[in-house]
View 1 (cartoon, rainbow, N blue to C red):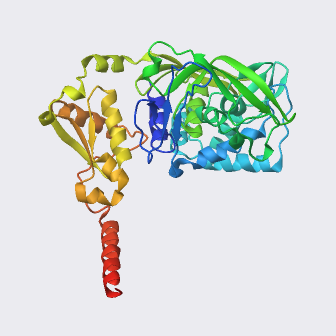
View 2: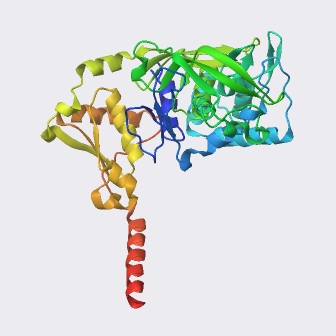
View 3: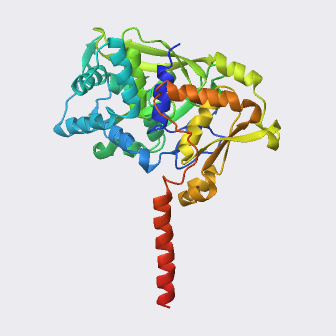
Length: 420
């Protein structure tokens, strides 16, 4: 099975995506995270109870957010563009087209087409698939982006709506969706009512996707009204950025693309339907199919890390940054190798201590050291979406900054003594 979707996912996580965690897990604010509570009951239940997106990852979320109020709610309504809306779309495209997950998608499609896509051709493809309007079943102005990312109305039903971040904003921060087109009369900040879980067997163990039913009090900007809508069964990936989601959909929309994906140890069928003429994306969403065979074998064979004696752990690699260590730890864990990170939180708290304590230490059991080395070597040699270095710890990268910090600190102390 092709690993293209996993490669896109990991490239996105290393860029603007944030880790999806079960609500019982702790997150790292510097990396960001979204906690998932997939099995709640009652109208007050929050599916995504905690979301942290650091400033370093916020850009494309903000640019995407500005597009949410640019669409008519009803599928049958005509769309009217304003100059401001066109500018917002151009700014969004400029930000995402060369983002890491989109680069992976572009390279993959170029290889499939046996012809490289230059910048102009790549932009034209993304615009056609996601933003070019088409008609279907009497609805005149449909787009893949509106359906998948924003959500639409058909009678009393929610159509599409497959982006977790849009759901997060609608579930308590609706004014951020409205922007300058708000406030809408009768609209509350909380526009989501969770109805019930519709999870597949085993899905709750994989927070990267959710399946559930909900109600949405959707703003109709053209009518200055709120439309109560429902979705009996819906869902989406959790933790991907909008460009990550679009990269997955763009690859899936290409002729002959694999329908099945393994992402973070889970199997999915990636459902995608085209417009009647086959030129545009009509909808795109994941269907959870269970744990991958490799995950099942790993769960059956892997020892409980708590049962591994302290003397059996060895340092596998040292990393300058916690994110790099986490990515490699995830790679090894997906293959059944237990891992643990030492000094991660210390360095996240005070980055300047990284030199002094030797970086983030990635440990594995002594018995798995050879297999871990082989797996990392294979990752580095296949030209994956990120190239973890795993190089021996060196002071050269941070030494200039550390010495500058030390000089400023000592200088400040001396000045303080002189002026006492």
